[in-house]
Image 1 (cartoon, helix red, strand yellow):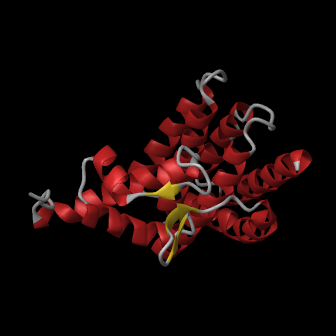
Image 2: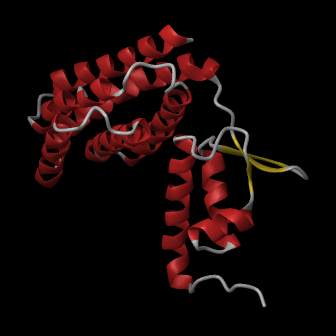
Image 3: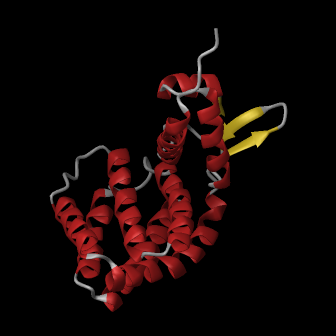
Length: 219
């Protein structure tokens, strides 16, 4: 007897759960580049059915995190370091825009959340596992994109930040500690919370420039 898919009203939320879980594993390389991805195995590990995994796969392929080949299967995409320049070219234009919009338009509730995130970064233990640190970095950027209040901009930046984070995770063993880089985001968050558009934009640009500089030093 085959396992029944969850009730219809739960499929959407389960698909979102599966998508987010697999996306994080792909970004942090817990699912390594080039690894075959099997619906049954992933469904069992996440406690969902194959239909849910297929929906997650569809979205992950649009994010350039997996690739499907007819008669061969589905695989985690390789990390292409040659993409760094293209990724940076887009981010250095859009990240300052998102920071500026967030400083201007964030709701009082989001500004408070942003301040709390800045306080959290100040207290971040530098000895924290580096992939956990990268998850904190992603959370910072997701919060800024949300506060920018433009869903199209948010969607695009999440996609490019995912690709940049994969490059960072791919080179973690060669890079200096990422803790100081991530803690520097506290200043950016406070500029946004304070409504300082110019400073927020400038710090966001500095963040992207520093990222590429650090990565290129080890290439």
